[in-house]
Length: 390
Image (spheres, rainbow, N blue to C red):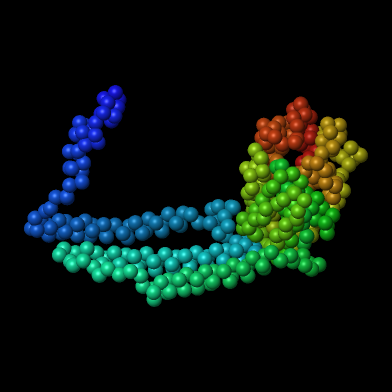
């Protein structure tokens, strides 16, 4: 470094380069490329042609491999895929996506095809004269301005139509109204027409329009129904609506898709779609008041103990066992028949329910539910009581 500084400050640039031999390197680096005799050009081109023919033999194999790879990515294998619509709104969105995709594929094929043809047709050849130099082409510029504008118009028309269609609020007595309320970190569902409040499991009837009125009590969330109706941002003190009509029965996972805190990834829920009679039966059964097991002489003693603990351990201060009473925590009426607990984090088994009751912070750190210091016996009694509420 001392030598470098000495030459840098005391000598001219030419002397500086010559001192390190860099002038020789630059001369060799930027010298004209070596030329080959004319008799060597033909064997070289022949060698490239043989390599090209060998590469062509692998094209069918590579194509087949790509098809197998794409077949392995079937949408049925991904439960939260948007490429398998299960409702009318999702089908409209999927149609718009595929239309735009095919337009993009057509543009890609035409542009890249023209590029490859131009590269091949106007490639440099030995002893070829210099091409004619031109500047601009008015006709060509008009054409490639009109064509993209036409393509954008073909995409904009169905896009605007779909936006207005999905943004309109459905009306009518047959529309099922559901209020969706976001919490950190779980979803609450209220059915004002039915007098039902539940959590983490959205029950819907197939073939009937469902309108969701969504808001949140704390931070911003995003309500996502992957195979039914896309997503909507959910804001405090504001209602956004989203509607759809389910086409199939089943249980489908869904998720909050807006970062809302440290347990955002565990803010899930289930969409359970059933036929009309099954939904009516569920609503009628859900509207029955909770059973008083303490007053029932035939009830399991462990269930009776659990009911007493539910009141004594302050569980009832946050969780309601009545169908239409919302409190701070999720409504637990008929919690024993739900598929998941802890907002889709754990399957609703006795073992997982016991883990969640005893150590909720170990499964979802930061939730409002505290560790109550319950003994194993008390946990088993609470699990029995909650399981009996179906």
